[in-house]
Image (cartoon, rainbow, N blue to C red):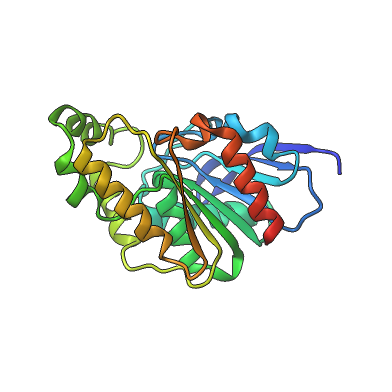
Length: 243
């Protein structure tokens, strides 16, 4: 099947959201990418070309990011997945979806899958945010890293909205949806204590599904798909082949 690329903005309840859809496979599954906090769809460029050789890809910019407009609506996960679902419907991209979420995007895909499990064929979490991190892990950062971390919440969601998202996903489970949690093993911003907690959180995430697995990439940092793109490309391909 020849590759085709669509890039356009769509009106989602009064706001123009930008997406790109790349079709190169006759497979029914579309890989839906959810970026980390404040990142636009270009952050997937490290894997985009290779993944598009075997899978259908949907990438988009959330409210206020990249080529999408900014609204006055909340920037928490409930609103984000509402926007995403409307966007997918308007773009006529039907399920099933393989959801790939990086960092904050991991919270969003977890919430989506818990609300619409019949639409989700599988989930890949790339160094995903965990609902307890601000309460339990951030206090173990160095003062410098803690200030930098808490000071970042001006790009997209506010700190309060981010923490609302963490509460929105608390207690959510993923049933028997195939789940792969991938964690970067080399993260210089962590202290020994905060990294130990992060690893515990990642293990907990893998237990959210009865078909959950956990993979640690020793040489990767938080942006696994940028640090070790070939590994991420391969795991996406492997999951697509199994679904």
